[in-house]
Amino acid sequence: MIEMVDSFNHLSFGHLRPFVKRVLSFGKGVVIKGHCKFWIFQSFNGVVAVVSLLSFLLAMAYVYVILFPRFQPVIDKTYETPHFNSSVSECNYFEGNWIQDESYPLYDASQCPFAENGFNCLANGRRDRGYTKWRWKPKNCEIPRFNAREILEKMRGKRIVFVGDSLSRTQWESLICMLMTGVEDKRSVYEINGNKITKQIRFLGVRFSSFDLRIDFYRSVFLVQPGPAPRRAPKRVKSTLKIDKLDDIRNEWIDSDILIFNSGHWWTPSKLFEISLKIGMPITAAFERALHTWASWLNTTINANRTSVFFRTFESSHWSGRNRLSCKVTRQPSSRTGGRDRSPISDTIIKVVKAMAVPVTVLHVTPMGAFRSDAHVGTWSDNPSVPDCSHWCLPGVPDMWNEILLSNMLSRN
Image 1 (cartoon, rainbow, N blue to C red):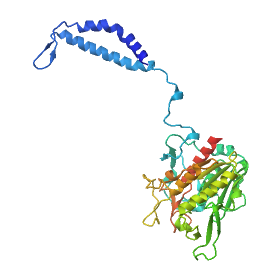
Image 2: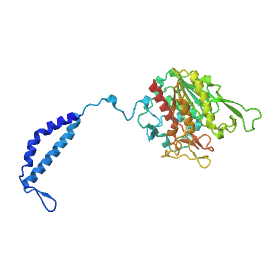
Image 3: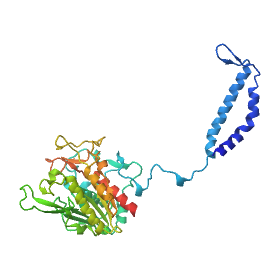
Image 4: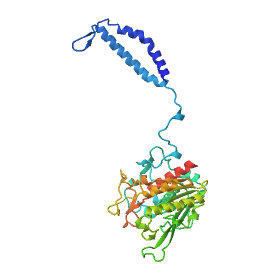
């Protein structure tokens, strides 16, 4: 590099030295130092010569700056350290921000028979549609645009299984509605037992017969096994939670190609009030113990060569007020997370998954949901007297979870 610059300097300026000498001697005037500390040329021609020289040197410098990059050595790109990797397989989907996108929503919940009435906020009276016009943009990569037909073709013959609580069911409903937009004959998509979408049922399965695709949901809010109340238990205790035994419907989850878990919203004092846990064990410790039970079963049961496993973290809620009983749905996403971008439940999930033998992808949706105070059901449900700042409207935030899930699955294939 240095030799190249020296060579360029010699070629560019070496032949100019005699000219420079002549210019400097052009004035032949005597330079004197006056009492005002200024240097003055005795000859006016000397001034003209110096100005001409400076102009010439500036012009040559400009040419040098323009031409010099052409003489730079070529850097081997193999050794460059990129600022980010935009490939889908290495994309950090969960570091980013929400941007407005008029091409959203991806479907009309009123045209999807599998969207639960309680989550169809527009049908329940919500007038503003702005909350449906937001798309999650990862910081250093792109989520491919959703193409229902293309995804259906790639998922032909597969079985996708969701396991968890009502927020898992919301994601299940969202995925079905998204994919139905790519189906011409809507009658070819049906619940395999003819069941309606309800909160109480433990199993729901929808088949896309034209693509031999099954998308199932199993309700297992704790993932571990519930049981009857023990003898001599306080009257408030209605059941027990066996944190060392996985749910008794666990074998139904095995024969799957994509398996998505979630848990967390029921691991709260209010939800566990009527359930007996091991005495003296904090809820966070009990949850971690339950996750280890889940992890142990997964490590010894799931065929990782066939089944891709995901675990979605805690979904941010936006309850407020002194006792967090107030639900105020905003018209725009929040500019700040208010601490909702972190959760002990999510931290525990990440901690347990890291120690597992079977590869599990964590869908860390906690931070992205923290901004969406505008997208909750609120009072636009099938029971408006009970506000809801935990569940999400459909279409809405769960659609973005599924776009990330699908991007991840397709990148593996």
